[in-house]
Image (cartoon, rainbow, N blue to C red):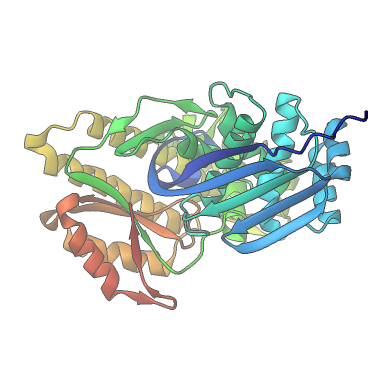
Length: 422
């Protein structure tokens, strides 16, 4: 007698990861700086389910959308260990929407890194309450959640900081965003109620800093979207690497990371070695290319070279000082210590303006928060992440949060009231 075909039994695995707040450090990550990050309560959840057919289906609740295609050519490419350019070309050929490049980029990276290819069709289901394009790492949360789901699905274990590096590779090579790795590290390894210190050389995790019991780091979301693939962000990153090349050439010393330059050394020689502004064409004629694999110098663009080099040098020092102050926090001198940390946050905020990543809306939010000041439990505030809009991070006493929420409710933007995120 012929045997009965076995009924298909789908396998489902899930991964979850939070968004994060960029307390300090921000765009200095690509220059090897110390950065301080904190997870938020909002998370992204990804479920991966096997299918009995050869279809790929990716469904998202934010944005509310679905994409499907024949999975066979993509599977064939994974078996051949195709490179990033070919994988991107395949995604474009099957008309994958931009939001699907994130999970499918993770699939490509995971397949190559772990030498694993699914047996057949797959379905990705994505749901998230992490705000998008507001500088709280919705993309990193999606990448880490997807990779965790793939790990569970394939019974694969990640080691060290591998999951974060794989997420960054997907975003750099498949999505095309020239981000550092701090976002993925914070999403993968951040702990509630703590700041996660990361030395971005490239991914050294230091011991988490526990926040005082009565202190919170909150995100105040604005209406202006932040985008790490935007022209201001790309120009700031490019200019930082241009400045590094100029400083090394004229100073006769090379550095693996710009943030290794001591602030005092920059004060002594920065004005002499590095021009305030320079066109891409002039830079290439005099200094050649930068050592940044993620950006290309545009000959027609005028770059803020000196300030974009100065920011990571100063920010690395500010982050080290803030971390030391918070690690040695003592309640009798608590307000004074937190006020000093708040001043470092404000210096960081001003630095974003100098490198072209400031935001009039975020300036207004920071000014309004600091009018309350330490006397009312608000110690510091700064623009977050890639800048040019997005979210303001606030260091505050928990008892002062109702005041801050009231202030947020009073300030209106084009899309309504501003909101706080924990």
